[in-house]
Image 1 (cartoon, rainbow, N blue to C red):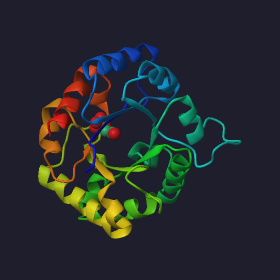
Image 2: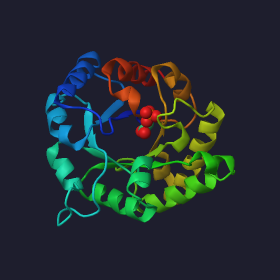
Image 3: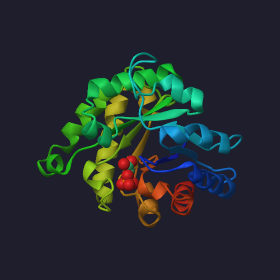
Amino acid sequence: MRRKLAAGNWKMNGLSASVSEVTALTSTHVAPKVDVLLCPPATLISGLATAAAGHPLAIGGQDCHTAMSGAHTGDISAEQLRDAGATAVLVGHSERRTDHSEDDAQIRQKAEAAQAAALTAVICIGETLSQRENGATLDVVKTQLDGSTPDNATGANTVIAYEPVWAIGTGIVPTLDQIGEVHSFIRAELVARFGEEGHAIRILYGGSVKPANAADIFGVEDVDGALVGGASLKAADFSPIITALENA
Ligand code: PGA
């Protein structure tokens, strides 16, 4: 049985005052029935981890380097994230793939670095609008999934986030059938590659998840939770999404 996961991605948003959003979440959801993960900018990891200490709310990074240390100015290693209090890290988010030209081979190395540092790697994949319009969605998803996921992936060290690029930050959400088609495809691919363990790897949906649409999305087969951007910034928005997942 996969435990559901509500993950928030703050992207390049948040200052030290944002710690109040975490305390609002931990006081509202004292014993959540689902896993909850917040991925703030690296500057806030330590402070948010301290604020959430003793509560199951987990803190994650948004990216890590492929190496554990070295001459890489401005980068952050998986070990450093772990040391700051993170237990997970996003890798291969579409904004990293676009802004920093990250490719599948590099993302796989980042996921391997995350696992080596005992972080859960949340590997993000998803097609662009033109790829969907050209009927290439499942091919793109398969290529990214195969290329970005390490061979030693397990339910404990890996989460897959399916995020159609055209749904991220746009307010446009795929139909429930479209979400279901891709999630069941990813599940079949994971089982084909990893056998029984493929059933243990959680698959999140991401892209314009809001309090108003969360319950419907969580009702789709093989949707094990969400990766939430804009609606994770405020506890008042993220909290009902957590509750919807608990009730799914
Ligand atoms: P959004 O972002 O919820 O603001 O669409 C999702 C994401 O990029 O992870």
